[in-house]
Amino acid sequence: MDKGSSQMVKILCMLVFLHVGLFAGVYESNCVECHAKMPVKIDKFFYRYLLKYSSEEALKNALFSYLKNPTKEKTILQEGLLNRFGIKEKTVLSDSDLQKAIDAYWDRYKIFGKLK
Image (cartoon, rainbow, N blue to C red; front, side, top):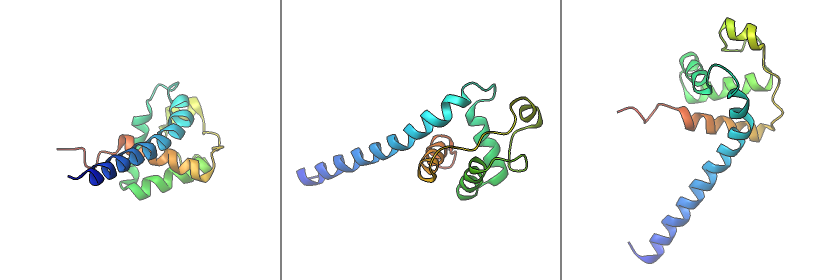
């Protein structure tokens, strides 16, 4: 690999890490903090969403819709957790930041491509 190609690879890697870091920042500061207080960890919610919606697009759309306008009909919470914690408040995140957080959530817990 020549010096120009090597530098290009380094720049691309830095852009990828920056991109992932920005997604994680919104997710970490707006989602993980609150969910850390719950008895059921945030990854378990992901798996419940995945079981119900089964694809990346369907899961992300359902999560976005729920967070913009949470209702009992849209929730994936089990009855006991729903009785204990109630329906979540509407998100205060912009659509763009919400999508970044959902993308980071997907990237963190997706199982596709990780199974051997």
